[in-house]
Image (cartoon, rainbow, N blue to C red; front, side):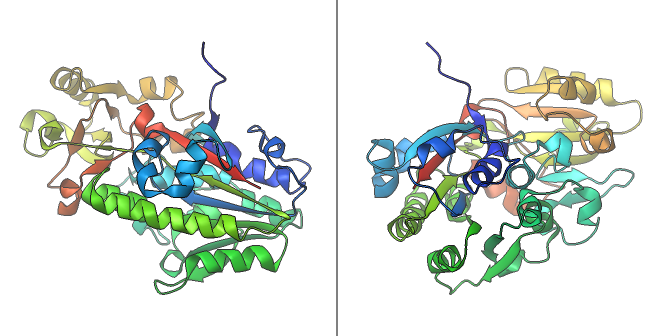
Amino acid sequence: MSGPAPGSLCDVLPAAAALLGVPDAVDRLAVTESVAEQVDRVAVVLVDGLGWHLLPELEGSAPLLASVLAGGVGQMSQLLCTFPSTTPSSLVSLGTGARPGEHGILGFTLNVPGTERVLTHIYWRDDPPSAQWQPLPTWFQRLQRRGVAARAVLPALFMGSGLTDSAYRGADFRPSGPDDDYAQLVIDELRAAPGLVYGYTADLDTAAHLFGIGSPHWHAAAARVDALLTRLVDTLPANAALLVTADHGGLNVPPQARVDLDTDTRLSEGIRVVAGEPRVRYLHTVPGAAADVQATWSGLLDGRAEVYGRDQAVATGMFGPVDPGHLARIGDVVVICTGDTAVLATKREPPEAARLIGFHGGATAAEMAIPLIVFG
């Protein structure tokens, strides 16, 4: 017997706003039912890479999360991130409450329409301007307009970036440095005034990419994340709630499951620009080549990837409603890896991309399912 369909990452900030009494905020996640007392401040912490299916594997290194899994503390439910299951898309979906087809951050990298340029969102500054590339308002703006303080405690290096503005536009930023006590910064903001406080940690995801899920480095990162969350729970004011979620899960990709489009002329034929990332590729083709590229990739990656034309991909609804102004950001051909396959582009992307062990971006449950844990 199946349970209710999982909620969405898009619903987390509206639920937090509902906890704070914002009249037009809809709590689709029943968070208000999980919090016993009335609260006037809410912390939302996003743990990059904390996939639902990874929780049992990391619980030996994470006592608090192990207690959550055992039903001893907090209340946990399963959500789905948006597709693609990649950090830039997910962060903006969290911030705006909209799916990637609506907000336009449709992947880790995107071709800037009308050019040969590939925009890497984590390095994006001000070109294109963020308000044009991602025009939707965020929940931070909505809260501020309602007179509810909305703050984000983020690494100083994130300040002024296009991605930060797209996801957290309207927030009052509290920059943190590498030597700062990050947990204390979040605690101080939560105690200082009512409203929303947002926090983020990339430690677990970085370890997964560089060393692999299940590696000693990954377990060490899990322990550090757990210690951070434990401090927040232990110091949570009586009039506050803490919501913990993630942007995606992930999986390890073994060497034999990697395909390099730049070393197989059959795969590179007819391609003008390659964007996306190894688990989801956007192939922008030379004029007239899209059908042939789709057919070739479908044949060569049969059983290892789903290969769509742009219109087919949009019609599936996987991106949500797609604003017509964002359509050209999606490849003429869209390749979504299944199983543990990844498509590398070694001549077009930095060499470190091919050295990664952990990946995400695709539509598998291991990549899309994320937790929502409520303390309060």
